Length: 303
Image 1: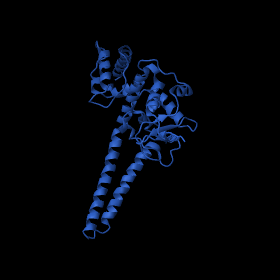
Image 2 (image 1 turned 180 degrees about the horizontal axis):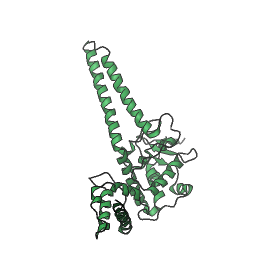
Image 3 (image 1 turned 135 degrees about the horizontal axis):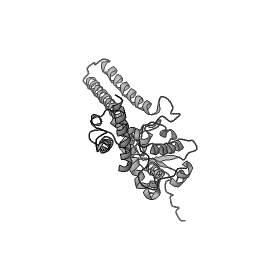
Image 4 (image 1 turned 90 degrees about the horizontal axis):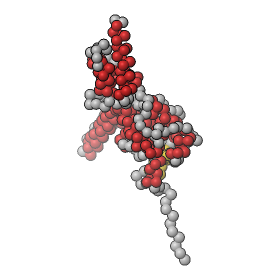
């Protein structure tokens, strides 16, 4: 009698076959056509960097205080245990101190969760944090997150360390830092707490084909090149009250070039600041600089 073969476990899935369904790659496909997907992934990377920079200080403060409370509580517990082993009566002071430190750590964790989802059940999407990101890109990504947050949307999942497929709740896409879920860096995804359930940093996948999502969202991916929309308001904010702007004489030859150089210095990534604002090509940038120079001339003449 032949022995029946044991069927493979349905809990283990082929990750290689799911690569094109990862959240980041589908987001990239919404931004750019299939043959320009790498440009979309580069844009996703810029989004993740902008979000991380926007919340870096808040996260570092919360993480440092949380770890400090945990370490101090462990130290107090160790001191209490050592005293108990030596037969010394340390009283209730150490127990109270350890309890207070653990409560402080819990409050910090709750505060970070509140920042992302609010208190209680995450019933609606929170206003997202995207930093200095392109408006058109943000609008497309928000369409995707809104779609994934619906009850009728496609299911999402991740793989645990054993390779088992685990579901991701739709409310995971309600948090303010949902844009970091697109990052390819696990430490960035670690900043995002789940609204409930266990914390994880694994890549998220969507149980749908990219083309199906593109049709459902009715978006038209770009055929290539950089997005045509630029955040001129963010560029202006980067120039306000800058000392170099005050030294530019709009009546002198080359004033527009000076403004262009200042915009690039203040908007493009640098060790002197945290800005990462996309700047248009020279022709469009010169037209924008010309408007700024004209405004400077008018405002100074009104004094």
